[in-house]
Image (cartoon, rainbow, N blue to C red):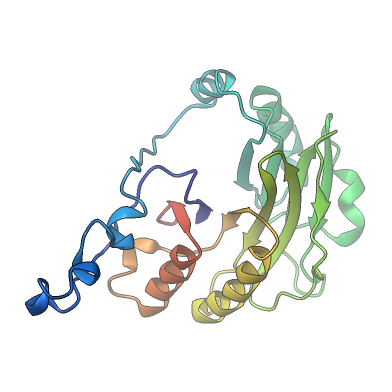
Length: 244
């Protein structure tokens, strides 16, 4: 499972750096200065820490944080049988946004998702294929707008994007699901184009979901390395680096 977050939210990145014209550093101080190298300095003040939490410990931690936006994600693998569990989860952790993948819903089943205090939007998979599907539970009264791009335009992944107006600027939140067996290089090309268009209008972008990408294999799998290079080129950082 892969989740991607804006670089100003995560607190760490280990960047690779290189020297240009090593033998002539004295003659090219600007090219070889570590003080000016973005690879050395863009993420140099970040301290990454990711820990496992119980629901109760996380609830205590979040209760002390003044935040205007809180987001969670669940790969639910059939939403309807798990509605009572999700109700309990949101009672304990009342996030503004709960992104859902593998909802296994049809277009006419949206009304069956009834969570007190939340409204539900979804993009189901083509009914001829079954399974899949993505959705978002949004706290009532929380402002949002479904992104204007056609929701059926994605070819290599399933996705639903909303825009959130905040005081600091517009933030786009996207929930993504890549079915197993999908060609990663094709997804990378498509999401790269979509991210480029989003960031022309939004100040921040948060991608959430199950992307079925194991970033621990970057060193041995070209398509995985290209995906990682794509998201970091847009100043996005992975929160979870391996499938879970």
